[in-house]
Image (cartoon, rainbow, N blue to C red; front, side):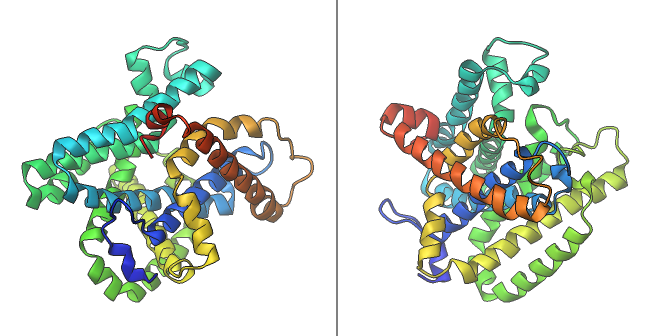
Length: 355
């Protein structure tokens, strides 16, 4: 398999191993980032952890670019209504279902109690609201997909322009209902669509794009500051210094693009050949939604039972050994649970969108 095969239009019986491998790599970094965040309770803050900063700078943007790329294929194969219904099935229903499981079987945690002002009951508003927080990537991807479908239905030629205008205007809207995540992901979703449209140009200039991306990414990582975390500084322009906030937002986007393209370029050399490593990574790419959902549900609770604060003061050991093996354990556990769930077609459709 060569890199040129990345542009194939997926048929019902054919999978793109390169894309699966990149998805697998992305979900590995998601789980690894969560492991760094949750295992060690004391000592250095995960916000200051150098490996967490590296992972955070690109992992969700990388995931969204891949999602936008795949979305463009779906857009060319389905009508607006059909694709909208498909996204409800694939994204919205699983996001809602997993939040209901979180709420009913395990109970509202402190975070959601604060959101609902201490409410311990479920109604339609609470379910929809909580779903935008629990698996925020799914709901963000759903919103972005529906907005782009609407733009495409109005005028296909100007869909990217209309989408961009809506995104810019959204920056002056509040961040409630996880709108900060939607606004954060919007440019990467659009970039995935553009990458799909201009793949020939990108492949022709891959080395130039790759070297520029890696150089930019390395420099920006050295300039990283805690204010660039979306969890620290909002996306909205309400009650902020306009120019300072613009600098933060632009840095946030640029490092995400640089990191994502750097990772794609590295993947060109690492997993663009059909070998054991690429097959191993692509295997996880078949389970991205199950891993994302199940790990989000269980990882915090599992780490509550782990206390390594007194035995791991070395950041390198923590990042490269402890969290690495824990992440692999979580990944395999999620796949095991997913395969058990998939034995029931209806439950699998509800929780995994038919994947």
